[in-house]
Length: 485
Ligand SMILES: O=C(O)CC[C@@H](O)C(=O)O
Ligand SMILES: [Zn+2]
Image 1 (tube, rainbow, N blue to C red):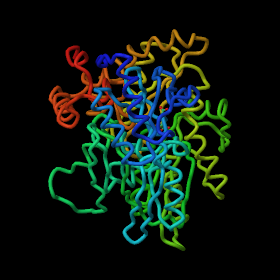
Image 2 (cartoon, protein in one colour):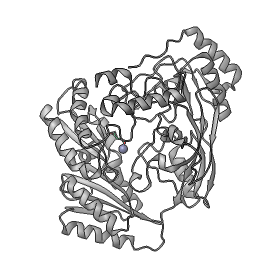
Image 3 (cartoon, helix red, strand yellow):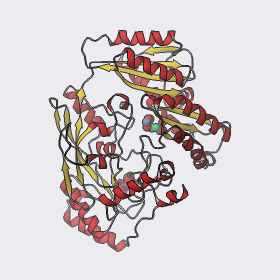
Image 4 (cartoon, helix red, strand yellow):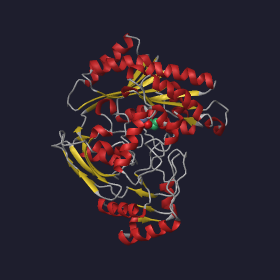
């Protein structure tokens, strides 16, 4: 792990005084309860540590704060809704935690240009609702949408369930405003679909996990709101059948599939046992898919199209059984079976998780080979695969064997990674599909990509953050793992 620069306590005190003098009172947080919430980490894998945090209300306040931290040589950790899964927003001690949540205004929705302008701390669900109120769709959608912030979504290039049709946060971001590590402001807030006037600078910050600057505001891309949505929960014999159904649905619907999520029977079972899921079919099957089609066209024949897809799916042996949601409430209940899987896994004991992507066509082979290899290593382990099969992203997770001690199970995390990751790489995959690198994979990432990629990552980091003050020890991969590889 890359060591943090050693900052003596007096420098922190001097910095805190300078921040207090330069910023409104509400911007410097020292209250232990408020700090504790910012220092907690979603998966309880890391412990945060800081004596104060800064929560600016405007870009200008953040600019002042960054300039002062930079002048004092103190590292900074940006944090949005603190829902990330790889410890990217953890202040380990020795940095100033900068919470973006007070910069949460939705500045404008523009239904003519199909854009909206938001501040980084705006909550994703609020953005979706503001777009819907103007007859538009902001299609980024993920489990944490009730509390994650758009700045964090952009900084981590969030994916979720709409990627198949609409792309990741990267594809949905037109313009960006960024505070650089030295406090200067880059205003790239241009709502343009075409702009070849130099390097596409926004892309250096999107997905950079706060390693080179603070995303403070963005112009987002919108779409016409769906007029009709059809959702089905399908029982499937295998992941191969899921791919067959996906391709059938894309073809017969004129590419109107907006979500296609896979879950194993084990995953579905734990949602029913631990997270209030209600199984909607009469018989269990090895796999299930939640399939959603939508259109912005009023009076469409989407339901008939969907029924044709399902009928052909049955005839071709791709589907064993299926239920189509008749009401919004039913749709929510079908989605809950997929969306509550992470919560159910938490309640079902220890989990070892892998955020893998492979080419869509290789998902069945990847799942088969990696499941077999891990089961050979630990008989009795429960494979708990689920995820965004429509875009190739599998949450290739495991739950502890019955009766095994949770801590004893978690000690197998590294050896299991060493089994799963080379198999993902053999399919030309990624070990960090949508959750990012953060702290969790900083020691591993360099071993699973070409050396030249690590070198280029380090060179970009050094070019944009020459003092090395932004979110140190995360994201770019550290030298130790490079040597190990
Ligand atoms: O908990 C996980 O492994 C995945 C979380 C999230 O990305 C999801 O798709 O539900
Ligand atoms: Zn996911």
